[in-house]
Length: 269
Image 1 (cartoon, rainbow, N blue to C red):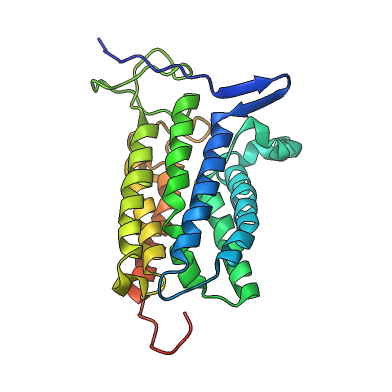
Image 2: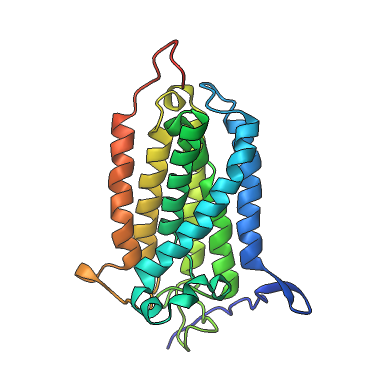
């Protein structure tokens, strides 16, 4: 017999006035963007200075578009391609959910490349500062997944297992909380430590690489406890889509860390 602790039934909608609803998931995105935005304005001033606070303000719009467009396109391509082929207009039904972190990350990377080239600022230095605050948004996002009772874990008999409203009668790992801890709190502690070490900060691209490798590793571990997406199940070698998409992140991250070199004295960051 399985034992489970009660799932804390929190209404996914915080406030609803007529047809207008404010959901925890939307607030998670907003909180991640606003906190990351203000934190980023403090980080760009650290030596070597890579941008002005005004440039950070201007980049916010680019980042939001990268997250939304990339996240949605990534979900369509990686998690529901066949479905959206039959109903392509539903690609635009973002209110029905369906966002991919890997797609959102790709979208933000494209935004960084375009914006930094336009502004003639250091791509790697700017990317380091952004990657140092991204785990804030990941933390809030995973908490929102938990509140929504979605993306739950595999069936388990651990003492803290929960029966999720949409997960059937058996208790499951609260994998959203595992991921909030690993992808959010632990990864945030790591990248914030790195970005505040002058010798590491001078090696442009190192912190960004550490984030990519760290997130990929955390996601691969987390997926061992998370139930695979129903429409995909287990893929090559018993891996999940999240794990397969994270392997390149780990490799690219390690590459950036190994190639990172200090900025020579007298040269712009």
